Length: 254
View 1 (tube, rainbow, N blue to C red):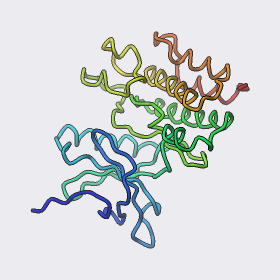
View 2 (view 1 turned 30 degrees about the vertical axis):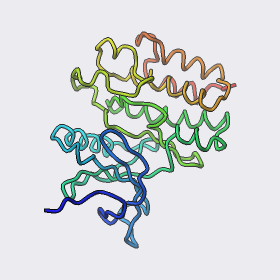
View 3 (view 1 turned 90 degrees about the vertical axis):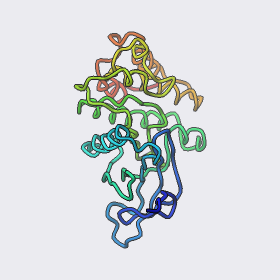
């Protein structure tokens, strides 16, 4: 049987893959457009494909679990997953498409940001993460590349739940060091399992990175959020993301 390669032009559930818009160690993401007058979801979606060389049982299980975790979430600041599909021996996650990720936008379209709207972006991302935690999920890889945005900044959505876990599940040793360098909380290096306090640390580091890249002056209230969120001792951090959202929404930021 001839191997079917996943590339631009490939069709899945009435959508044709266009250009590749993202790639990681385990998957590739394509922009896809409907070929039907009445699209199944929206006219443009994103299609995440598990790398063919990653088709071991454990990787397939993790990929499907990622899709299922997000499919059960419904929030304006979480990327929407439409479906998880197996086709031609490959595995796909069909999801909402946004223009770009936050880090890429900061580096290539800096002009769309200002000192006011960047706080709005951070607030929306904070609400998304608070919702994730309310649902008992630890993201484990919060960083600016995993926050998707539209160029008009109306949409801000957390994505990439490839490492996400439900808090009640035991974390094995292989989980401890997963994440993105520079955003992994220090307690993970001591062998402690990932939890919501670890995500809060990563979120603080994300804010720090955003301001560093944009070279915007960091308002005192934002600086205080970062200081508390990134404390080396998890007990000294915010009790929950709601605390960060509260400060961002109710206190004047100067």
